[in-house]
Every structure is written in C-alpha cells, then in structure tokens.
Image (cartoon, rainbow, N blue to C red; front, side):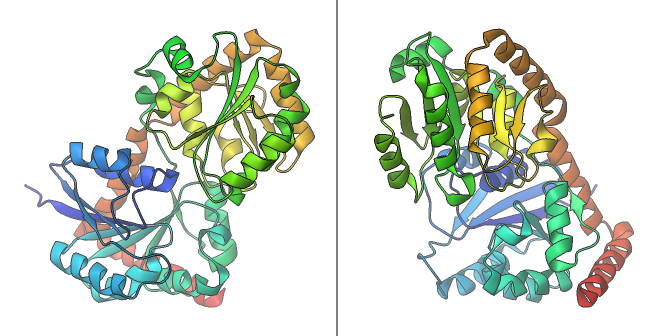
Length: 392
C-alpha cells in the first residue's frame, strides 16, 4: 500500500479570487486515500466561502496573519508551518514565492511546484521578478494555466518546457443554482422582462470595468429594460460609481459587492460580459458558460481558447469600446440567439471545463514528483530548465 503524500498549498489569502478558488478546488478534490492536503494562507481568515468549503472537506488550514505590505514575521511563521507539516510537495500560487523561497530551498526532501495564474509579466512587479527566475532555476517547477501563460514564461524567464494544466470548475454547481431565476430577480429588485448583463470580477485595472460601463452606456443602456450587474469589490469601485453617475446610469448599473451565491447570480443573468485588458485562464468565463450564458469578452490571454467567436458568444479586441458595445447591443435585441449561444456554452463547459480533469492532471504531476521511478526524469527536466534559464 502506498504511503500518503502530504501536499501543502500556499496562497496569499483565501479571498474570493480565481487563483485562490483553483487552489481550493484542487485540495478539496484530491484522492484522500493517496493525498493529505494542507493549506497555508499568508494572511488571516477572510470569512468567505472558501473557508467554509475547506472546513466541509476536512482540509487543515493555517493562517499566518500577515500584515499589509512587507512583513518580515511571515518568513519565520511560514518556515515554522513548513517544518511542522513536513510536506512531500509544496504547491505555491500567485506572489507567495517572495516569502516561501528561503524555506523551500531548505526543504531538501520536498518537491516544489508553482502555478502561474496570469501572464508572467503581470504576476509580480518587475523589481522582484528575480525571485521567480531564481526559484525556477533552483528546482521549483512552473505550471501554466494556459498556453498564453506558458508562452509568457518562456518570454520573460526563458522557461522552454512548462506543463500546462487548464483551470477547471465544478460545472454541475453552476448549472444547477439553488435559487430560481424568478426568485433571485424578485429579491434583488429586477423584473422578469429586464435584460441583465452580468460581470463577476474584482474592481482592478486588469479587468477594465470602465470600458464595460462605457460600452454599456453607448449601446444597451438606451433600452430602459437593460441593466449592468457588477459583482465584486476593489480599489476602483468608487471611481466606477462616479463614472456611472456622470453617465446618468445610476438606475441601470448595479454594484452587488462580493457574493457567495455566484451560481444563483449567474442563473438570473442573460449575458455575461468581461472587458479585461489581460487574463490567464479566467474562471469567471467558465462559470458563466457552465451556467448557460452567452459570453461577450475581450480577447485577453486564454479567453479565445474558452469559446469560439459566434458559437458560444462574441470575442472582441481588448480596449475596443465600440466592438464591445455592438456585441452587447446585438445580443440585447436577439433573444433566440442568446438562448442558442447559451446552450452551446453550457455544452462546451460540461465537455471541457469540469474540475475533475484539472485535479487528475495535478495528481499525475504530483505522482511524477514523488514516485522514485519518475524522479530521475523530473531531475533531468529541472536541469534542462536551469540550462535554458542561464542562457536566456
């Protein structure tokens, strides 16, 4: 009988972001007969649904209560957590390597991998990219969430061989909301005949909500039954609210804040819209498609790999307000097309985005890192990768 493999995931915080949700999807669905997952959050408890999902799955979570900005205490606290857990595999996400790398270099018995959730140029600020380069040169194995992300790793760090594991979601969870469309709309103050464009994304420069609001104003907003429903929070929220008031759209643009009922929210929408300037492999688009929504999105990062233009929705160039507005207006006036695109989106999500495929791919990668039969090849891969990095 194989011994259990202890896998420790490190995330900056357990907030309702896409990368954090991917980490939770992985650890809660690993084969418990083979793997023992642990999660370390550099920050304290955020009291969102991810905490509940981990608790329900019986996954141990350690919160390090990091302070805002640089916090030297995090090095010691993280080192102590790694020492106490004694993991076989350490799996890091987002920008945690700046705190984790010193301890990882001391964990001689453990294997290390790092999932890159966004374009490499956008993952961390330029001044500390040397940490990522050093980590990949010292045995931390990078994993990209999409082909565009893998290309960015090659472009920025010289990583010539990078495993690509696409993100996944529990498609059934989004296909079967707990609250009916009619009930959700009644409760939130929308009518059955209102046409709702939804967007689930944090209010950050990457997502370019200002473009989405402007596109809505230029086209769909001329119809009083059209509404733009924005779910999330972030540093740009006040600025977006001011933009909405200046455009006279206070009654048609709605800020719902952070929600834990995303399947219910999506189930009440008619169209999903995303106006990002850059992306990795966005869960929000997958979730919307699984909910049966047609998608209007910019061709940012891995988005063009998620849907086919004209088949499950429409893809427009990043930053192009007129094309985005035209696509939204076209769907506003064509109910039959919305339904047919939505059905196609749901079908594609079921066939391609289910979380089981992602978890299986990570389990296979974990086995390659811990199975003695695969260790030599893994070592050779790291050596080839290190040579490529030195030449870059």
